[in-house]
Length: 166
Image 1 (tube, rainbow, N blue to C red):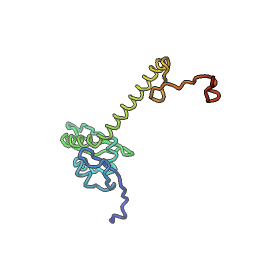
Image 2: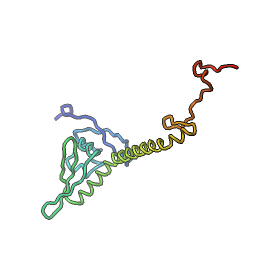
Image 3: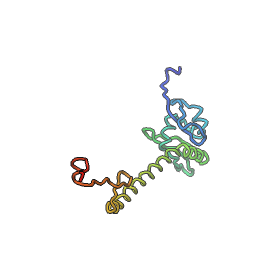
Image 4: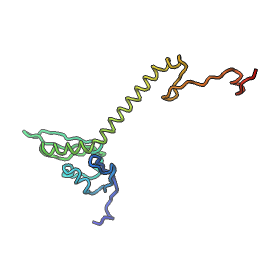
């Protein structure tokens, strides 16, 4: 099969811990040296680059009882639920470690988003508490900044824009 006849597009896979660029281009539809070398335990599970992209957002290692033994499976969604058999606990631990590394940027972004929303909520709450005290002191909020409003000297200044001379 020729390269031109394959349906191949460019995607992104990242690995920030090793110092490589956060968005190293890889070719989807084929295993690349980047994903195979970076995640050898995951690469043994017949995962495409599209699957790696889906695993960045979600996925987990699931233990299941089979008779007297426990086997492990990798479960994730890439549009629909996908399942890959892992096997024993040792391989499951290796896959779990690589999965945690692959999902670390996504988890960090989720935590940062949660903290940002909490900070915004607290700022709104505290500014509502401070507003009456600021108004009593002659100040007001202008966005998040505290300002003293401009004061007009007389009613004449308001209507003409110029001060009346005496």
